[in-house]
Image (cartoon, rainbow, N blue to C red; front, side, top):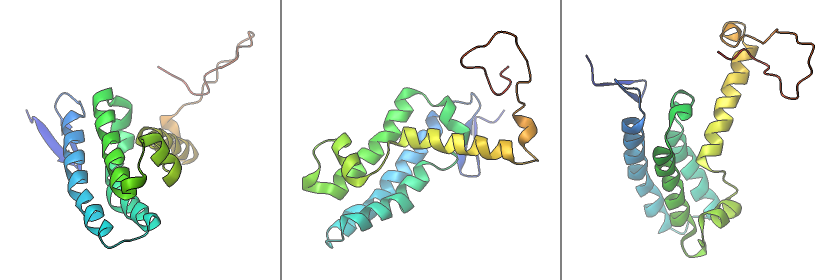
Length: 156
């Protein structure tokens, strides 16, 4: 029995919890945060620092998120979000008041909402692809009773 393994950069444990994977992602993201700290000293514009954050740090925080997002517990989700909070604090320095204000200034969404959007985009893409459309069978049940929110896809 293998306790844990790494597959395409994602750590999978035998009990399929994503705590270990999240810890590894966060550790590497904090290591990459050093780039922001060093670049801030050179008076680089905030827009460029945000771009660097998106490319080098946020992209890593979202790697393979469609696999693990739906099973993420609140603690892991909050820990991931904390990385973005710290990045915004580094980028905005004295202009940073709170996380919500920093998001408004930088026009960045929460990581949780981005993961939701990425998962949704993946699922919609799968329904349109002829090779993966069968993974999402549509609910063909016809009912004489009109309901407000009928499931579009068959849910087991």
